[in-house]
Length: 441
Image (cartoon, rainbow, N blue to C red):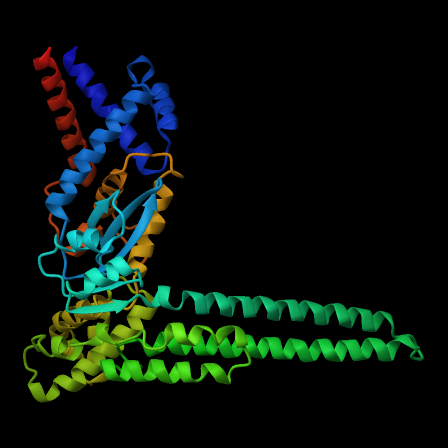
């Protein structure tokens, strides 16, 4: 009887885990459990206690296996169920590597989160005062997130696009009115309608030109912060800062006064710190067998150029280095060296993949966690640990990481499936609490 009850409890907990991970409310989860297990299913209050066990178990496992892993991090704060959560994400694996739940985004709390890292070399964040001040003294290379930095500029460009479409619709309306007022021979209304049509066409042309110019400048600003040029040469921080400032100098040449106010907000915000020491790190990568230092510069340039290509195409992480090795070997006229080049390409790709420009890694993870957070249905402040553990141990279903888990990419070896580990730890916590209650009675 006891064995059957324990089995049913395990099954209930496994189903509850899946329901909560995919966004079910506590009431909805209790209803599903009641449908599946009838009288053996727990009620809503019991489900809340089970959720507490799951969150506590997830926090313990997260601290044991993921907290403070990696040498670089994208940092940001989010709000789940109204509770602030500070988090750091590894950019290559998209694994969540640090969490502080239910704390304000102050400098002291960010410093406490960063203290969990053993060797944090680079980080990127938005312009929040707490995280910016904490990162200045904690990492060698701190850069502002280009996505947050240019978000206002991108929104203004989007508004210019909307105005251009409005002008196009206005021209179409005026064309219809002109054709309708055009009798044969032309009547008195035709010249008036023609004049309105010409004015609408002029405004439409200007609106389209403003949008095109703003979109082009926005593209230049994004390219200005990139650490590689199209030929595969590594750009220095000085070059990045110079290109950023030069692009901003063109802002006043646009016929878009709405963008002029953004110039002061963007001026001097890019330091090029993310590219600091990149060339030195690449030079430390061991050359393939048979290659000498005189050939390093050309080989590195071609491999970096191949990374540019595969990065933009979102080639799978396991497939990009072998493909790059084959293409580089063919370009050099040495196709038989492809196998020897694969290890070098993999090492260079990993360095470049971990060179941070934006905190898009955090935004990608947040888009997943917010969906599974269940529209603020889970008030437990440590629910983020539950989501983080299952995210880090669940394989990606698409994209360049398809078939791999964040844990595998990060290099964390787990003894078994993440879901099974969480279930075992949660059941262990439940049994310990039950034994403690029994001993008190």
